[in-house]
Image 1 (cartoon, rainbow, N blue to C red):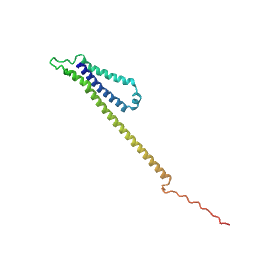
Image 2: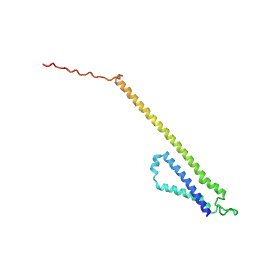
Image 3: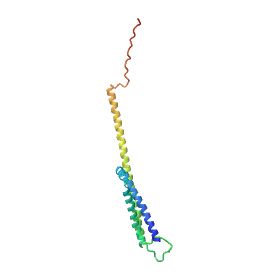
Image 4: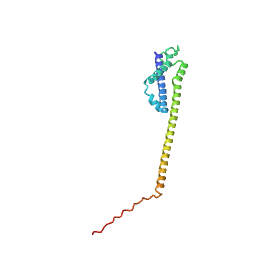
Length: 168
């Protein structure tokens, strides 16, 4: 019974961290290729395939526990449930935790780099738009001054004189 408990613990822990890794890859795709991601993110078969693959890998990592890798020494406490095989503990920890954590860290660094690049491009676009707007304003000002003759005062039209006829 102890081996089944330990195997289920390893399987669930492995599935948890692998799902976090898959979520980080999904976020990276959403940030780095938003248009392609929006078209493909609704693919239900792909989602189920990823979840299924996660659980298959998790069960493969945990299955040696059930098949006798965790041999209890004769002098061990029979009421204690723990890992006795140090090599399996280290190997499964590296596969189940260390490698996925490094991958998640790497992917989130890539997400940060992609977001910084996008922010820099947006600032550059805003600056170019501001420069274009200022240039257009300046050009209009120059044209207005040129065609107005440089006179910035309003041109007043002389009032039409009304001739009055004497009453006869």
